Length: 213
Image (cartoon, rainbow, N blue to C red; front, side, top):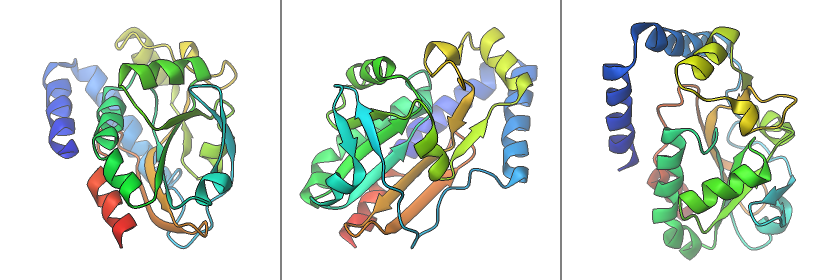
């Protein structure tokens, strides 16, 4: 299961990372929780429509996809995030079951289209991987937050990750909280899950169960 894979990566990180790094990561997570921001939309809300470009350069419009059936939206941080890659691959593993319910899967990140293509190819994904480089859709779904300066420094100096290489230059250090939204064909949100701690994710099979209901 995805939770077991995530647990393994999480435990390895906390056992090997320097104390100042783990302290900064935990502090940023706790501050975001306390802020009450980026908690996602609620079940029963109407899902905001959008048109975004997928990894192949095609325009994907939510309302058009909903004409064919329900949609699962997965908001992920980027292909540089090992937790995200595990989640993306976990959804690929059950994609046939999602399609058997007449549903579509769309993964959204603030990465540029080129980076989205890299993520799609690296993980052998066969569903839509779209770019919200302006972060407007992420914001509409109440999942957008900005990394604090001390964590930006940690990413650059300790993780060797510079998000300006992946995201739009204007707001490279704004990211989505990891979230998944199941949307009924009428555009109503059936299930909404958001976790400000990026090391934890909703189990894809749980999202599948909401489709089956």
